[in-house]
Length: 409
Ligand SMILES: Cc1cc2nc3c(=O)[nH]c(=O)nc-3n(C[C@H](O)[C@H](O)[C@H](O)COP(=O)(O)OP(=O)(O)OC[C@H]3O[C@@H](n4cnc5c(N)ncnc54)[C@H](O)[C@@H]3O)c2cc1C
Image 1: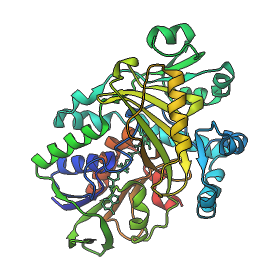
Image 2: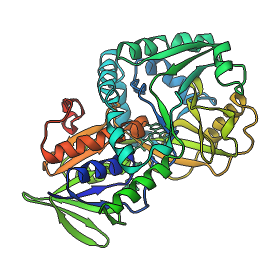
Image 3: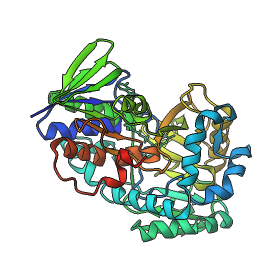
């Protein structure tokens, strides 16, 4: 049995704590904000086993100028941030060629095809089944042209094993009668599901783990110092030595990874949500509007409208235009939503090739990385946690991890 520190209590960190404790390790969890303090708090709540299409794809060469300049675009950048973003953006474009995009999509599909197995035992052991809603996600297109433009991605998904039913307008209306009749085509993804309350799920998981001996350190880690026989973890309250460390701090992992010899191009893809309290019954499943880049997901607290991408680093101010876009587009799709409650901004941790980092640090095999899960960290959290446990145990993982190694940059 080893003494392991997990850094970060999002989907990846808490799942790692679960799988490490299952192996019999003694685990301390460092987290300054509390469970679901980061991107894991406000996501769209979908278990998106179909989401193997990374944002870096060949269409960005055609669409990027329009995306960045159009007032109705769900994809934005703050121009003042461009000098800092330039290296990441250059690498992102390099990874958007057809061959590299196909390689990334394939590597994502390998993870996604195993994602369910990452949650089965965890959900059962921690009694989390009441948070899971088995209603398949519906992805919608409001014009035939948009549907046509997405054919190559739908084809690639199919080739990579994603199963979906393609629906016409009448079938969409039969499935979700409260939607405006503006959607021409839709895709219903088999095997997908959603959470009724993502933060509630993680708080309940943390409570379960604490009841089994998880130790909480309510501090931000500010130093990681690997040595031959331990790793020293430093925070404002002092420092402690551990046998292993799992770095799962989402977008904030970048600076700590630097201390372990890895200079990784990790960037924030900012996303927003609005909650519409008391509207839960307007749709029965997560409904995504492809052209507008957002989901409407029925949760315990109401419908959550979540999405958009903004490249602007870690500043905390929100962009009202993107919140307006979410509000007006969701009203158009689902009349009767009413007025939203407080808006939320979160930071998706994203590498330029769209793949997470799963592997050992450059300086020490005692430091294990699991971060960079971009738009699918909820989906891949359970699996990533099990891979962290494999790496700590020096067990052969269930898949080849070389594609996700930090050394690829
Ligand atoms: C609008 C939006 C919608 C999304 N929808 C979906 C979806 O439907 N399905 C899906 O699969 N994914 C979705 N995602 C993506 C998903 O939310 C993220 O990929 C996921 O939450 C990342 O989890 P994580 O555990 O890696 O990081 P985080 O959830 O960000 O957790 C990192 C934790 O580390 C802590 N931390 C940071 N620094 C330190 C430090 N120095 N010391 C200790 N702790 C630290 C933070 O407080 C935080 O709690 C969405 C994201 C957004 C923004």
